Length: 211
Ligand code: SF4
Image 1 (cartoon, rainbow, N blue to C red):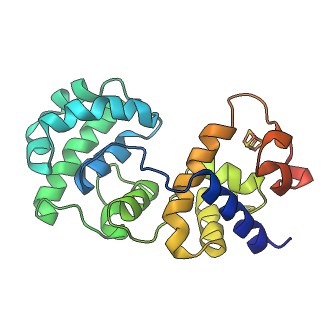
Image 2 (image 1 turned 180 degrees about the vertical axis):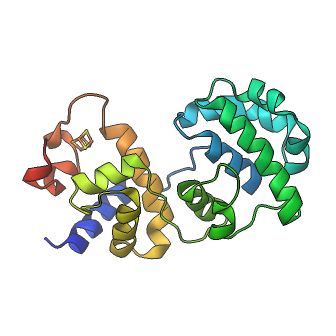
């Protein structure tokens, strides 16, 4: 089976398992999504969803967020990992949006990547989930599964992103990103691999990647 045949079959299985995968981070617009994704680094989505209702009640837009002090933001997001640096970045981010983008989140990958606390993956998530643009955000979970399934030999997430973007049509990227995340959550337990019980690893993982 070629890599593209394998990707097609994996895509069909993912479509069957997760036909309409919801966006896991609660948000109401591009600003609240951007902040939620920024908060999700090294923190579970569930944890982010616990803190954002109160945060967004106080500050639903860049204007009100920039008015909060770093300490006030920190108090609201304290239970997230890396909270002090995230609080600093959220405040700076809101101020930058006001100073440079008229209080709007730019629908542009390069501009997003320059914002405080926003890396390539965060920018990609916002591009696809807020603006419906074609982007394939790859985190470490997707990176590992793509390697396990033999879709990429990528040594890093950048390489894996490029490989996956070649294997699936661009209009599927956002959907595949979410589906693989949900797949990993459901099928990759904290401990052992059980290759035979997995609807994809059972046939897609090459022998050399079954350890
Ligand atoms: S075998 Fe199971 S735990 Fe291992 S990568 Fe596949 S789905 Fe995840």
